[in-house]
Length: 271
Image (tube, rainbow, N blue to C red):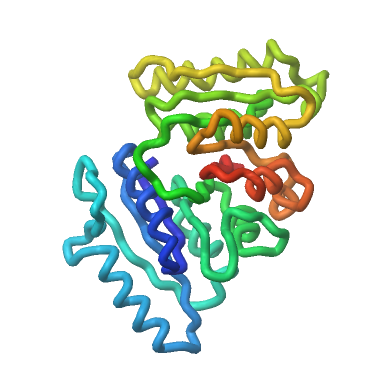
């Protein structure tokens, strides 16, 4: 995970996403690309944005931060002109980052999925994992809650979370009512869960992560919300639905509802 793209609207709360992206990049040995979109009809906005960029990235191309990172973190600032809902997805399609990070904004909450919102358009247009930062980081992720049904998409979400949450304790939830019994049962899902953990340990040359997979009744949405309330994870991860584009995040889909209702940072896996 070498190229991490953070989308920011320069709202004061956007420093949460920036700090989390920096921690992830530091843990993965990656670089940051910070991107902001401005109205081309407002030269004043463009000038202000360039000034803001100098506050994020120094003259040597490193992130300005008070975080205690293991190394100076390479970073670059990009200003795009145009409607954010159009130019940001196009930018991500060109750049093809390994991870997109964003947070809460001025006029919208990027973590709250409402059909037609900017978050919808970014998530639907990008095939890479999307991390929505909702809480101020206090350190690396330590407790990761994962919705896991044995599918390739759920496996990808779990694998991504393990990459930038090394050493975290993982709790997977499997809701049998949300899976076709002919395609997966508890034993099959457990085997798929174990394969992801073993593959991560082998690739990282590290011990297998501490992880447990639990049955969660018939409704994964209710189970995730209840587990978040009780277990208090700092990251919740889940895969996309099998529907394409915006349909994968429409109202009523598990991905969209989880993004909207969970209070922890949320990771939407790659498509």
